Length: 440
Image (cartoon, rainbow, N blue to C red; front, side):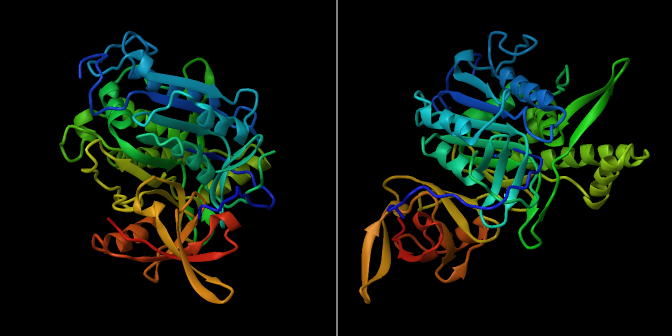
């Protein structure tokens, strides 16, 4: 609730690998589009152990963003009808000399020219893990950053769209406080990216590998190399980043537009992304296991591959298309259903509930009635929910996932007053709360 203070967690850090958390004629600005895309690419070149292909990952994402620029802004000077004015896409890169949580959050907190009709995009390549109590984290070379804290710093700016894409692992770890692209294209990347980055709204949050909260086990996010004729073996980067780049560059717009409404939402990208990731993972796995291990470490790596059936992107949220609807849900139904009549951005926390990352002023979530005991006497007060609050029940029904939460909330008619229960973020989840809220 809004009597809050900033909190963190304690415990030893377990380093893991790669994750990714997504938010007209040439040059023309449409009335229904974002004014500008602000992109931060955080590639941790100093992470330990080092990861091959970091530069390839960075180059692939930079290449993609440049494809949507008009006037030869892309790497090859290619021209597409749906490119935007180059000034509408800004790209900042950090991480060559090391990366810290403070560097990442300072970008979003200090970005002076972000407006309510802008898009914020964050891409990360490095190590990551999932804390069973606190959720996914980025294990940078300068300390751990909870995914929920990252998203809170982005959504606090109230952009129309926040995109979080992280290429890293999702296996178990514990939070500690901070201390090559194709040369041609079969698709129309400018039109695809213009739809995804300029027309979409809400929160897009995708990482490279899944985590099972019941078994507390997660997948590795793998890097793969490829052979260059006459040049030997070259690092190709993360399977997630390579697959995402290939899908957005090589797939025709009409093939991605699953419901034929001439707009592409992030939900429509999930199925081809997962298909491409699995194909690339199986190719890498077959090639790696077909040879004898070079040393003990290589044998251990092959053992991990044998035990991992696939690599599957974890999709926490896909936002909405520009008209607020029409998205085709991914096959597992993981992303958020529409956030009707409540006014919060939410993320899942390892099966324990849904955590608030920001609250929109003037919405039901900004005026909840909290029931308390004061000197043994029942009292109530009206306050706002706040970033960090965990919601575990709606009308006494457990809500461990976003899908559960919105199913129960959407079952309440307009004007209804559901009761919510959870843990107060201001007290580091050491104190519970019960509140009621009247829905619009």
